[in-house]
Image 1 (cartoon, rainbow, N blue to C red):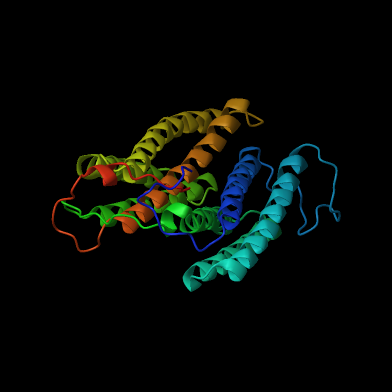
Image 2 (cartoon, rainbow, N blue to C red; image 1 turned 30 degrees about the vertical axis):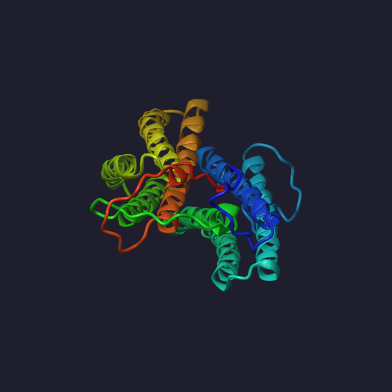
Length: 318
């Protein structure tokens, strides 16, 4: 995250240690998402048949599928503890009640996520529960990403408010794109956990791709000189391009894996990376959406004035 500029002259009310901790937690959740994807890709979901212990122990032999399943549980436990710490930090130092409540919401989500994880084991990986488990992981991730944005120096600084000259409003367009990506991740999780076939996921991919391109184009045409919007638009379009390529590779790997006794390295790498980039795409869209709401007036109808101070707007943001 870049430092605040002269145009951002309001002193932040939240200690930046909170922001840095939220950023650190976001990184830990990325590791957790990778660990969860590795469990599914290695068919290790039932490698440990009991919960919350693993073979009645806190430290079972880390061999075979146990390594992935119990390793996932260990990372999840660490993330849960870190989330408790973040919620307490926000409760003690955050003056904005809605941000404090968001911290407690994140804690509730991670607890629910742990319960769903246990239910997937208890009920032998039922597709609806496994899909809900994967979906809640994404929701928890973007909640922490949002907290990271809200506690940044950039968000708490005085920023110029911009007018949106186009239609549909970029705030609305970015919100719809984020919602579509989230739904697409649900469809992907449902396919991955055998809840239904791939067709809904393929249709969703086309819709998301079109929305991301449309949104990125709107950012470039209307606010091309505003760095805090332009960079997230570029990142979002770059990630969706990579994700489409990974989706093709993952589908090829899945089709090939049907005839193999064990998951191949190509299958594991492509599917795990596909899950990870999907989560990062959602996070980039969330940050772009939040940036639009922070910088663009909601009821503006006149063109934005691209003066020098605004075009150099930079911030400290996740």
